[in-house]
Image (tube, rainbow, N blue to C red; front, side, top):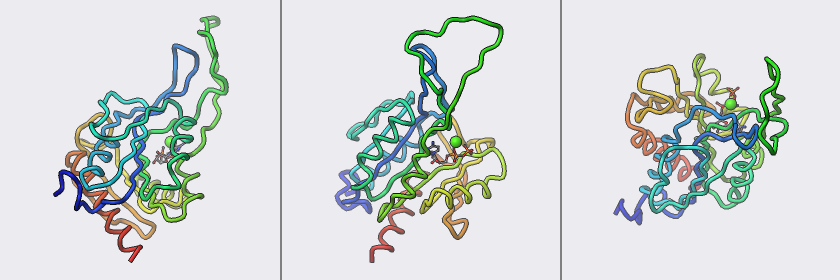
Length: 226
Ligand code: CTP
Ligand code: CA
């Protein structure tokens, strides 16, 4: 049955999901982060479990409660997330990178609170590791799913990312569209592979998007193995 996942299409598969927005420390009381509710990633973790997978959720900042019965690991920064994913990548079948990873972090995190001084202040930032790009270079049999949240030129940016990061699928959402994007319970996505558009989903619950996405991944994974 679907509840226990014993006959689910992802039975026997290990699915790693990253979710939430990473936190990049400026000092002990301040940080840089991205808009991300974590809802999409959590919905994917739940859907994967429903489909019978062995799920490992790696979550950065989110207000969502950790889904029951799912192994959830908390991380803070992009670097923490990178290390957590690295530890499980070898044994994963599907990796879903729904997290909003900060692109830059402060060059140095101050160990004590930075005091207010002049009228302006400059923060030096350095690029974080691109986790997905790194996984794309390392992958052997893992099925990699990336996300691309865009405000314009959605298809072009999404397909460029898929290529650059060597993903099997990329889920693009136009965050300016009604009922899609941050904080909402619904989403509307376009899913691309290297050849182009694979699936276009109208506005639906994030749970439904998650099920459709993982069903597609499962079909492709099975097709590849047989
Ligand atoms: N990603 C990642 N590590 C980073 C940045 C992004 O793993 N340091 C992943 C995200 O989790 C997502 C995908 O890459 O699955 C695309 O993220 P996005 O921010 O849309 O793309 P970027 O390559 O960072 O490009 P930009 O922000 O300039 O659009
Ligand atoms: Ca980015």
